[in-house]
Length: 501
Ligand code: ADP
Image 1 (tube, rainbow, N blue to C red):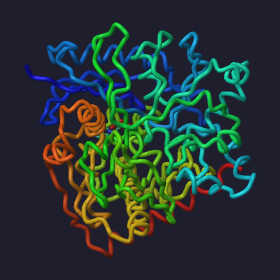
Image 2 (image 1 turned 45 degrees about the horizontal axis):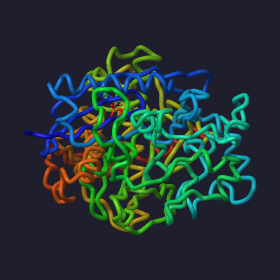
Image 3 (image 1 turned 60 degrees about the horizontal axis):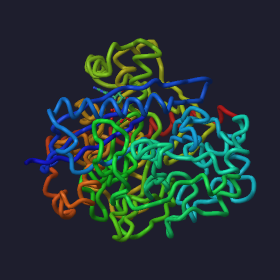
Image 4 (image 1 turned 30 degrees about the horizontal axis):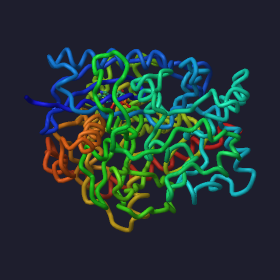
């Protein structure tokens, strides 16, 4: 009998279930989008109950499409949008508030107040590897406890629990109010600002400063081990859940970046470049994050340097949904191809402030360099180029931190079908850009973590052997033009600063 591994990929815009065979090929997939809730400028929420319903539905859908039953699946892995924060009542299973999404900037004041206690943005970096920023979970938990009626009292009484979406999905899959497992992994925990990167345990001092009761926080286990079995009566009933990786770490794993010095860039809602730094925890001098890359069972922890960019693919969505300039994401490329270059226009999408390498929550978006000459095609091009320029800034920071220039870049995610973008990316970086055959590296990484735990894959070499190249783009822009374009971009970025007090 052939067996398979399933992955639940709880992403920012949708939830997917993908089923993989031993060679790492996709056998079946089902996907559902969920609502993006924007209650105010800068706020972004998800309905966690809708997400849980979608999770159950896509698990059933993927099995049905693959003509499979639970008995064909040897393990399930979970991967998820990181940082997105949920607090729920463990006695009723009900969230006390919508999930506050990673892009949400409402914790601006909390973050500034914490920085003012001393050390500013760098206050916790030494311990947690992160600058103080609205992006991370800790301040979002504090916001919920401070602003939802009765939440703090219930949390202190031990009734409320916190989880990122991995923990929410795992808790529900393993029975919810009826014995659900309240667990996370170090990759997710390393995005809360609450986990000590050396000990992989919650830091009581930081939790106290953020007024978060430790009793709310999930147990931190490794990224690859059996946490429990699916107990709810859905399609995967009885299957062991054996892997958890935050989405970007999962993609790093799925791209087989398993040795120090190997990096990938994922082009989704935002962009996330991760460089495997091995068992060494490298602190950034250039605006990158230090984060856990993965911890496989009892093996040593592997760390990564990360460059996070808040807005890349979501700028294409904005062009479609807010401006109606395109009818579908793919159309952006058609429009961009009607012109030779950006016509002098640069679009800096600082919609959630700017993440790496700037970490400026006071920034807001700008289109600069406009003249009467600029048309729809130029704007479409500027939209795509924004993704490539932002990625160049992150690579420059990585090269500076590691001292070893990257020789090529492995890419994945929803935007890498865009050939114009991929060529421009190679041009603006000056190194080849390489796309793998299996572009669904996030789900694949979670499947690998789960499959390793149950012996479906024997070692990391199985993962390396499964990786295969689909296409490579080589740089063709001359150096002088590359650097002139990049200088213009840098100038455009400075126009986005100081928009919020
Ligand atoms: P996530 O996992 O973050 O939800 P995906 O990896 O599924 O995101 O990528 C979706 C993103 O890719 C969307 O923001 C969408 O705008 C963008 N996208 C999809 N197709 C294209 C395309 N042909 N050109 C440019 N961007 C695209």
